[in-house]
Length: 246
Ligand code: NAD
Image 1 (cartoon, rainbow, N blue to C red):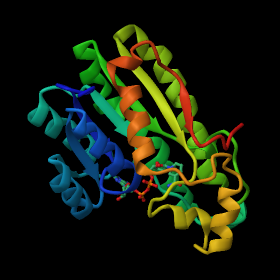
Image 2 (cartoon, helix red, strand yellow; image 1 turned 180 degrees about the vertical axis):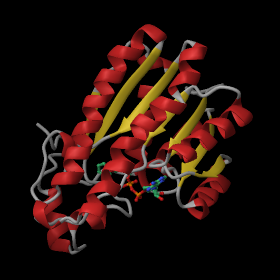
Image 3 (tube, rainbow, N blue to C red; image 1 turned 90 degrees about the vertical axis):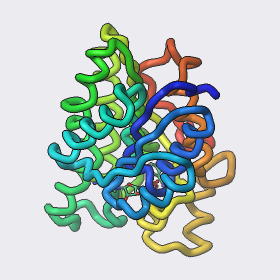
């Protein structure tokens, strides 16, 4: 029960890594609010793990304002925020990604962190404590071709994590990121373009530990970084990548 008594918001908790983080957090004693644009998915995961679902579009200020009100009503205080919701474009030359898709990726992957700073961070500052975990990517550290705008959004997130960490440390708030390698989630197919045994083998050949990451891997890493065991750790962007970035 490493998160006993803690309250947490997990964005994008209706699927993939987010659902793995929700499962682990609940198992370790946290009360969790799942903020997902797909409210049916959030409701399903919430039902499995005894969490609270809420329809939230993390790219929209009004959605974050509603989330802050809902979290305050449910929990009184937010101890942990996991900015996990994210999207990508399909692998393609950088000049072929349409402007509206670029805008959407930056709004969901990057602007969402800014909006969380406007709405949730003030609650943490008032409490004098809090933990934020941003789910970035190995793509932000060791980018592959044809995913440029997705990669760049994750690089943005890593820099934001470090600045937030140093700026919020005096307020008692820790801010870290995790950098997952390609993982077994519905998003994987979008990164691969096509889901074939050959493309899977190509991806896995770049991961020294020889497998894709899993929602359980992210749940375990997130739990550690958001728990009091990591009370001296802030501003890290921790690879959870089977050695991919070495
Ligand atoms: P996923 O598609 O399985 O889950 C993403 C969840 O986010 C979904 O439930 C979706 O409904 C929700 N979401 C999407 N847009 C949203 C919005 N605007 N507002 C609220 N919720 C929204 O994806 P995943 O693979 O679990 O990805 C989770 C995070 O991990 C993302 O930030 C992704 O970039 C990152 N990541 C994934 C991989 C991978 O290979 N799967 C690798 C590195 C990093």
